[in-house]
Length: 535
Image (cartoon, rainbow, N blue to C red; front, top):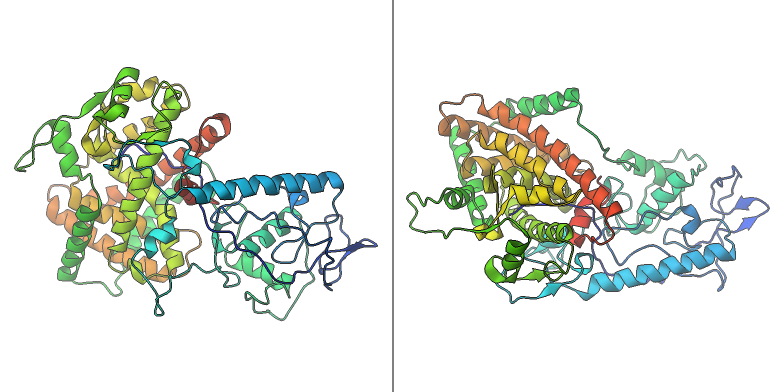
C-alpha cells in the first residue's frame, strides 16, 4: 500500500452479439411507435413493428468496457437500434456519420481493453517491463476478484444481476447494478425527458418482458434508486456528518442480538488475523522501517532508498526500488504524470489486498454478490486512506513495501495539480497518527469502513448493518482493553470515518480535474470501474 490515487473507471467485459428481434421507432406524422412522447411533446402510440434490413444497424452501446460506458454522448448520438428496443428519432446523414465514428472508437476501446490481462504490480518480482498506457492495462474487476475460488451450486461462476430486470449487470450505473439495456433505457428517458403512458397494473419487469411496459420499467428504476447524480460533489455538511456519527453510535449500542464478550473477542481475533495475512505492509513493519528500529522482531529491515529529486526517482525506477517500470522512466515522461501513474499501479494492488481481506471478514461472503461489489466500490478509497498514515511521517511516506521513501518536499515540488494529490493525505495522517492505533485496532476500523450500510445501491441493508454493528462493538471493546488511558478513542474514530469520506470526495474531484486538464494521463481500468457512476 502506497501513496494512492483513485480515479473514475471503465473496465472490461466481453461484448456479446445480439441475435434477437428488436423494435424500431418510426416517425410517422409526428408519432413514434413506442408509447412515448417525443422531446418535442408529440404523443406516441405503443405499437412496434419488425424493422427493415436498412434499419438494422449496430448499436452504439459500449459493451466492451463492461462496467463503464462513455456517457458524453447526448440523445442524438444514440444508434437507431438499441438492445431494449427504444431508439432516437430519425437522424440526418451527418448524425449517422457521427454515430458510425463513435462506434469505430468504441470498437478500438474494446480491443484495447481485452488485449492485455496483466496488472501493473509495482512490488512484484516480475522482470522489468513497460506498461505504456494504464488505460489499456487490464486487471480483474471487483466482481471477478470476489469470485476467485467461488462457484455456485452448479459450479458456474456467480454473476451480478441487474436489479431492474434480472439480466447480467454490466456494472454499477446511476447508483444501481444494472445491465446495458436498463442503463441505456434510464439514460435516454432522463436526457430526452420522455413521458410514458401511465400504467396501473404494476407490471413485473423481467429480462424477456422488460420492453413491454416502459412506464413500469422506469418507475422500478426510480424505486430502486437510479439517479443521474447518485452522489454529489462538495463538502459534507456538519449536520450530515453528525448524523452519520450518531447513526454509527446508535447501531453500536443497539440492544438487539448483541454478541457476548467472548464472541466479540473471537471476532476481533479473526479480523486481525485476516488483516495481517492479506495486507503486505502492516503498521508495525512500517514503523520499524521509519524509525530504524526492529524492536523485538528478529527481522532487520534495510533502510529505504530516499527519493527526493528527479535523479533519485530515475535511480529508483531502474531497480533500486521498483522491479517493474511503467511508461518508461523519467525524463521520458513528464515527472508529475509518471508519479501519478506509479501511484495508480500501487493502488490497484492495494485494492486486491483489501478485497481478499474483505472476503475473510465474517459474514461478508454471505452477502449478495451485488452488495459485496457495492461495499468495495465505495469503501476501498476510505480504507486505503485510513491505512496510508501508517506509512507516513511528517517528512514523507514509504513506497514499494518499504524499499523506498518519497519525501514530502519532493511531492510538493511537482507542478500543479500533481503537487496537490498527497498533501491532504499528509495533513490527515498527522492527526490520525496522534491516535496511536496499532494493527489490531486498524483491522477492525478498516473492516467497519468496508461494511457500511449506507452505501448507495445496497440490496440487503439490514444484513450489512448487522455485520457492521458486531464489528463496531468488537472495536469498542478492543479499544477499551488496548487503550486503557483513552476512553474517548472510539467516538474519535467514528468522527474519522466522516473525515475519510470528505477526503475521498476531495480526492475524486482532483482526479477528475487531472483527467480533464492533463491530456497525457490515463486511468487504470480497475480504478475507472471503482469511480464509474460514483463521483
